[in-house]
Image: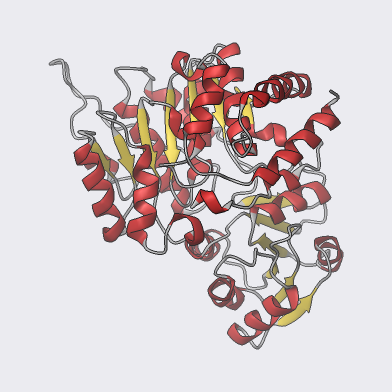
Length: 443
């Protein structure tokens, strides 16, 4: 197959939807030789902040000299972003080869049990990371945790960033139910690190950790991690002090909390994987993660802030960052969101922060209507100017002279913006691969 034909095969896999459960993934991994058994993992779940936390963990361990695999989703532009080694995207030829293997093995599945897109990609990543002899893999869940395809691994540590309402149609309509799905990554005796502060969700995580005899470390701030790791000395030598933080390139208070999660995880795993304090600092200071409060300065001095906030909790974090880190008076908002999100509440939160608001469609069949978004934003901020645009490109043409522009509402939208602004990490235009629909058997 050519790379284009390979991508088409992956597009076709989307029609199998998402069958939540581990049977298919275990079988496909077994046919591949169970590569997960030859790797070490840090497994990361949560509602928001998973990608940023993964990026920080990867940067720290890579700074320490390890060969680090990184598995994340969704991708912003190119499918190859999902599978990286030392932040180098998997090559097109490797994608072709691995998809060819998956295609051949898929014939061993009975009708109605064909591997889904995410199951196939998960096992592809495991095989690639094994071939690349990765010392450690930073392993992000796709959706939920308990029945997510990534949950066939036993990690060194499980990380749960936070719990808030999102994907309720698949994960449950209460924080407790969502927490139960996320906490499904907790394994027997494996330490769990979480920044969850919602009491309803935290109680569920505590109960599951207790049943699994898994040490639970809870933090609520960068400073708070000092209490979370009071004594890492188990051998009689002086206890290691919690690592300091230098200048974090990712703005926003929530990123300091993500950094606390990452560093606490590194500190908890010092016996398994020692990392010097200066390497922790270097890793944090050099972390890079596109589309999360990513600031772009145009040649004319105007600034564009890209952020993939796509649920109420993420938007609140964005608003906090705007007030603290970008307290400008004249803001322009370019906003597009998926219809299945709580977009009315998101509009109520975002609209008061901008003087000019451009609503746009997201490149997805699930996109919310720009006219309806504009109306909801108008209700929240009647004094602003409003423009319902037919496309993001049209909006970008109109906001060219504006001093400070925020583009947000969906990672899909941020990916399209990176393409249109010629800032994408790779060629591809493969954002459509992020689209999927849960099948009836998935829930």
